[in-house]
Amino acid sequence: MPFPKSTHRRGFLKRTSIVASALSFPFVSSNNILGANQRLHVAAIGAGGKGGVDIGYCDQENVVALCDADTRLAAGSQKKFPKARLYQDFRVMLEKEQHRIDAVTISTPDHTHAHPAVMAMRLGKHVYCQKPLTHTVEEARLLTRVARETGVVTQMGNQGHAQSDSRRLVECLRGGILGEVKQVHVWTDRPIWPQGLRRPSETQSIPSTLDWDLWIGPAPMRPYHGSYAPFNWRGWWDFGTGALGDMGCHNMDLAFFALDLKNPIRIEGSGEGGTDQSPPKASTVKWSFPGNEHRGPVALTWYDGGRKPSPELVSQKELPGNGCIIMGTRDTLYVPSYWGTGSCLSGAGMEDWNHIPASLPRWPGGDQDNDMAHHHEWLAACKGEAKALSHFDYAGPMTEAVLLGNVALRAGHAIDWDAHGMRVTNDPHANQWIRKAYRKGWELPM
Image (cartoon, rainbow, N blue to C red; front, side, top):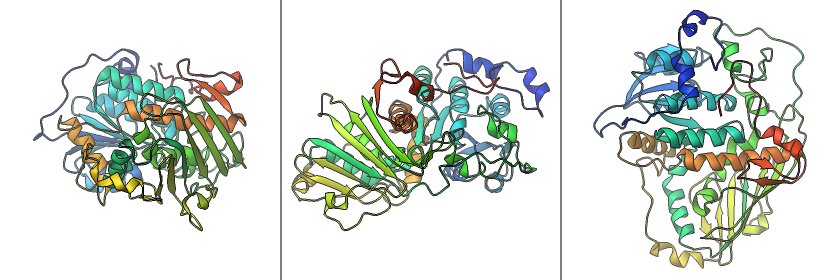
């Protein structure tokens, strides 16, 4: 078996081979797109917290199953969808419910995104997976490839991608309102959880509702501690990707979407307070993206942990907690939030604003509830009515670039990236963070 057997379900999984097959062999595509008037049968992998929000936006479909390693966290979703069957092990759920499920949402800690996503796609299920898409660069490549092979509908959970004002900004940026873009600055107020940590030496009792072995999944086994779960896992390399991984796919999305950024050639990172077990308390990362047929080279700089670009770049006395500045030869765009409305500083770019035609779809909720819009776009795509625009062909390379920032931070110096070979060329030691070793029995076929 490619995954270990839960100690509570050894007999069942010993009799099962289909999940192993789903991971190990190419998928033979079939027509699994429903009609517009049909209701999807959806299951949630991760049903508490953000998982509860994600499956909650599927309430106009048939929610048939819920899965969470901690049944306490799934209680809210159980109440909302009382007819849905409850599981703790996503492998068991996908095996038993495979003929009832059309699509899944995946809202688990970063280290357990890739395994259920690959399994679900190989079983022909559409997938909505939270950001960052994966825990490692290698996993991002894998999910991108499997999505292409299977032809299922995919969407990463960076909901600002469907925000109406953000899509207008993308249209205008593509329309040239800034001239040739040279620099991008992006920042966040994260982390709002501890980072720069040392592993706890004491152990704690595992909550009765939590299957700790399943929660750990492919990661190295650690004794249970409240500093890992249910929330602070983001501050540990074993389970999360730090402030950069958590918010990069949100706050950088405007620049990536509008400028078609991918495959950086050099990444420089500097952080403070990090350890070999936990991301830095604050960091600055700079990516150098080569030019393409539509634009010249672009430098993108990221800031977190209280670091920000100079407010003088946009003639401000101070900057808000989150934002983005995109600087071109004609004008500069300032977006003082995760996503949404922005303004051109000199006004030169605004001259063309109203003359650039709309080219991207808008969805109900896009003006106020971008989470709803993002989910509805995915659900409509599953029914053949639309295209999900944060599909894995887009989200995979974006996640890869974001996670390379963490590789540079862990290396402690600039890294040169060979995208074709998927390797750091100037420091072989840094390649250990491009992929990871999986706990015995949880190997993920690449």
